[in-house]
Image (cartoon, rainbow, N blue to C red; front, side, top):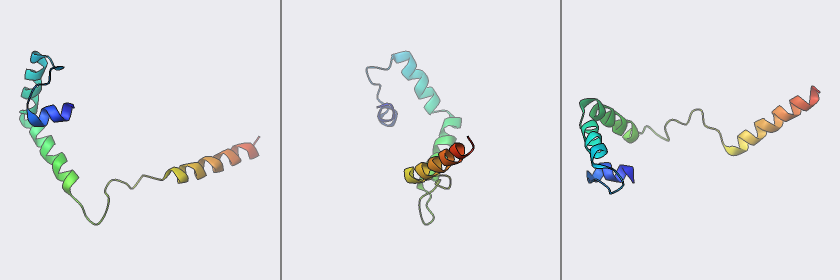
Length: 77
């Protein structure tokens, strides 16, 4: 909902006027605009696959690691 309000630049009823004014000032600031543009480029950049997943593992892999840890802990008791 918040993103939709920012993109449409229309104040929703649940955001007070003074807060909306400050949000517009922030969104129009040069620092916000430069971060927005950089993030947009990062999201659009693709080189042969999914990005930012180097540290990700599946739920199954988590389960295997937990079982191994449990077995090691039990063996040391």
